[in-house]
Length: 346
Image (cartoon, rainbow, N blue to C red; front, side):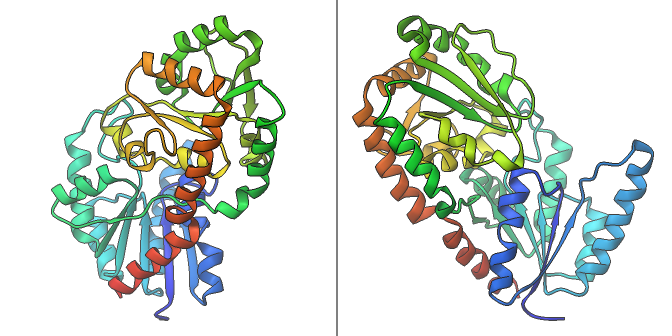
């Protein structure tokens, strides 16, 4: 077994954003530094009758693969205690990596059984990595100290998009309010329909909404809505169409656990951001300096109206946000922290 070998076992498939940026994004960088990296994905598209068989096969494979590497990183994989005991016997150097709230429902309600399973996984892991302050505090409540490691952005990949967005801002008075995500549109964006209606009544076709996601959104608003079907090919490119990036969130246990990756992508793309003052957003965004934080529907209307009318303010926020991302959230910085964590568990 090599000391510089690691196995990432992810609960999801390679196309999921969390997997792409918290697992796949590190693989070439680790290999460049001489690490032997193996990956095992647990989410798979198979007929229902084969799902259990495939899952058991992956579990057995994980036990075998764990014996031949130095470190095992469980990315969002919260296994039952009996299996965690077996995995610890195969390899005690386990790092648990979580960047959402595995102990709550989609509506943000805590489930006691899920919290207990998370507690057991935390106790049996040698180290825990989390993607937000909320999760760091949660792990602390469960009796462990967690390492805070945000989902990083490789800022250099956004250089062309930065140039496009900055150039367009000086060429046109039209404004595109943008939201990009894999899910949650109805919960997060739909409550702003009245805000979009008011802005459309005031500015007309000068302002529109652009939404990039997997399925056509249903939004009852007067404002023109441009739908961009998400695909891996256009994962970055669609951000060059946004004039303002929004991240609205209700306030509950699920949303407080979110890591704010959407905001970081907006900021790295030279897009001024407006976000609900919830969870990690309040740590990432310094209000009035690198973005705008809001607490109510009226705040949303005022913030968006201010950015629509004030191009200089957009430029100010963009300039500061780019510095924040480069200095704190770039992939290179995250990789150095991850390697430090690897050293600690060996």
